[in-house]
Amino acid sequence: MTDPQIAIMMLSLFIVIVLLGFPIAFTLMGMGLIFGYYAYYDASALSLLDNRIFDLFVNQTYSVMASDVLTAVPLFLFMGYIVERANIVDRLFSTLQIAARSLPGSMAVTSLLTCALFATATGIVGAVVTLMGLLAYPQMLRAKYDPSFAAGVICAGGCLGILIPPSVMLIVYSAATNVSVVKLYAGAFFPGLLLASLYMVYVIGRSMWNPAIAPKPRDEDLPDVSTKTLLWMLATSFLPLALLIFSVLGAILKGYASPSAAAAIGSLGGLALAAAYRALSWERLKESVYLTARTSAMVCWLFVGSWTFSSVFSYLG
Image (cartoon, rainbow, N blue to C red):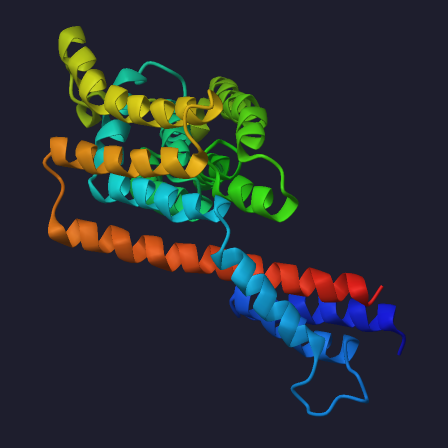
């Protein structure tokens, strides 16, 4: 077999192994090391371990550990997890649901708006999709929403975390391509908000065209509150989180702070916000730290594995 054919086999095996359920990061690393050993094999080597693929793997792992840009990843993740564990998103979703009750497909619109706000607080897809899948999806099904429509809303809204800053993917992309994180954030901010807005326009239009897929909420399902009470609920649930998010992003985009410094301030702000809501406890703090460490490790090992895999793949032609 020629080297390009070996590369195609490498890619095919990777797809098959991932579809079998193996973790992507370790599959990338395994495929990179196995096929890299073949690609860089030197018959004159003194031992079996004398192969350049091991040098490549170690150097890439070190570059990830030494990257100043990637230190923003765990800090942004911690800010998102502490906000999630403090049940701030639950309060926000309930308030927005009352405020948007008169809109067609109000629960779906509320879910998208909550997803967009939470995406800017956490920067990853998994946390947003998981939380909103547990929080909003069952409520939409109880309200007789079409299951496929409700699932599509959750998936579409959850994936906004890839694009809307502070997206962890943009930080990893910045580290891989040496492009400024600030420029990436500035370039992605408006398209992210535009995409969220277009999702909401689609949901409202689809609900008006076919009301059966998104019935209006019954009066007994939502509390009847006065305008003054609703404004107070919005002020105590929406404004603090929005202020935290836009302060962090504003500091980055205006050049007042680096992404890592702004992420650290955001983490501190998330702790202060959780304490203000009287939702900060040792158990929730411990859970947030554990989830941050686990997700950060996944992101960094994925970065190492993808770089090793792509290096070997391109070397094989």
